[in-house]
Length: 143
Image (cartoon, rainbow, N blue to C red; front, top):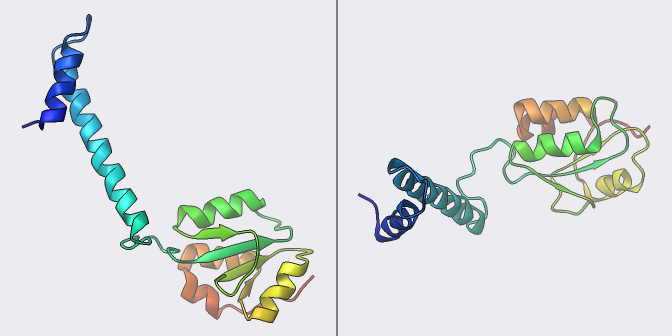
């Protein structure tokens, strides 16, 4: 049974010229489901990502240097698609630094702070098997 807001929306839509009778309730139901989904996502965000089951939830990655198999945008999209976050600078809160060729000062700062450094193979391991497997991978040397 539709709630009061759904009924009002359906009644309004039904009064529009050219709207088929079944469409208003279908649209109202679709709007309600979209609102419920958005609310769930918003509460998950407010709760600090609690309930995020994606493999890289809570992981922050900084990408520096040139990666042969990824653009920086592609690498960042792969991380975020699995629930991770990307950052532009290294801090003690950084989970991993992915360093390609000519990584610059971000690599040095990661070493100073003790942040694990991954090469492209390490990034692929992170994406495929998660942070525990990537943490166990040997760290690359600066090139």
